[in-house]
Amino acid sequence: MFPSVETLILFLTPFFLLMIFIHIKWISSHSNATKNLPPSVRRFPIIGNLHQLGSAPHRSLRTLAQKHGPLVLIHLGSVPVVLASSAEAAQEIMKTHDLIFSNRPDMGILNRLTYNAKNVGFAGYGEYWRQAKSLHVLHLLSAKRVDLFQHVREDEIALMINMIENNSDCVIDLSKIIVSLTSDIICRIALGRKYDKKFTDLTTRLMEMLGVFSVGSYIPYLSVVDRLIGLEARADKLAKEFDVFLEGVIEDHSDRNIRMVSGGGRQDVVDILLEIQREQTTDFLVHRDTIKALILEMFVAGTDTTFTTLEWAISELIRHPRAMKRLLQELREIAQQKPRITEEDLENTQHPYLEAVLKESMRLHTPLPLLVPRESTQDVKLMDYDIAVGTRVMINAWAISRDPNIWEEPEEFMPERFLNSSIDYKGLDFELLPFGGGRRKCPGIHFAMAINKLALANLVYKFDFKVPNEGKVEELDMSESSGLTVHRKYPLLVIPNTRF
Image 1: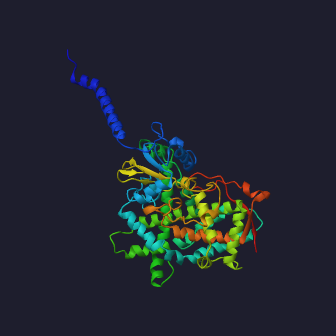
Image 2: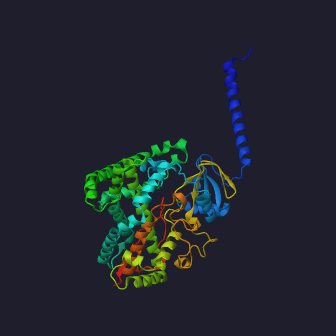
Image 3: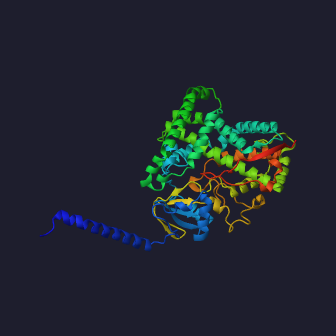
């Protein structure tokens, strides 16, 4: 008696599935054999190489690059990632093949916090991104617009200096003071006025959330984990709180904007965006969510990275008294015994050592060490390796900035290395990439550096900072925090002594 059709199907199905699986694996291995893939790192099933990231991914990934080469293929969960750790690799990605690598991957949880990636930093490459970036470049962050806010920077830095003077010879938390400075400057520029502690808390929670690891971003079929541990709920709650706050800000500006523009008053960023929305004549419509996403981005990109640069620069100068003394000498020549250094003073004089100190600080302490990931939009040859469409690309700017093939004594703080060097931070020199490079480089370079230069100049010119408890400056703890941006792990506690 012959078996039934149902029995045959039940019996043969596992066999056919096995044969299909073997066939797919054969095709895959045969295909890969004909491709020249970058050196790869052995990985575990499901998690891939996620376990190798550790608490400081920029350091762990540099170790992998030192073993496997400047271009390495790893897998974060199911996501293939090409890790670039040399200036040559960065140049091919950001210049030679910049267009192919100008897309952003799906940022998962981060999209929930940025109005579905309607900001410039996370938006996918395309017409929306081009139009949104043009708003930044032409209307919000142009050199002319940044210069118009000079009075805000000078006012807030003067308030900071006065506050520190009032606490001279006392232990102060300089990290907290610098955070307040950058937040207050950006609040006044973006929103027209400073806001209370509730807004500061919102911003702090946002920065913490941006650095949280999301399982679903790398292992999509385990995205339920993000839901079970409450990550999605926390992100949605924070996004809603920010949305309510920003809605209130926009409503407050709507009527005021019409009156102020007609009277020729001074505009903040919200005013500018509302005016563009009201008068828009192009195909690109500035919707409410676009305005909120761009405002939010100013705080994310402006507050955290600017504060980080200042915090590390002051820390390094305290640890290196010779560099502090040399910078002070330059600043005294600029100030000519005036009580404050103004932006006009800096514009009208040469200050190569101030520039060198900031470059060296950003070299050693790249604010966003792995930059923002990119994604290939087509198959491409990269350093003679085959990179498939859809591959995620991470550039370890921190590792490049400490590459011994580029830098003499790369782990040492030596501002002098930049005095006779043409290397700059504006994205054209791939040895130093604090703001990225190519089409996706940060459009706020002029905005950030205007704050950094003026704040650092006045802090050093006005105060001699001592370590509490008669501590030795060379023993100042320089441990790093973990997260999207790398801060000091511990607050910078110092005793300011007024120089005059």
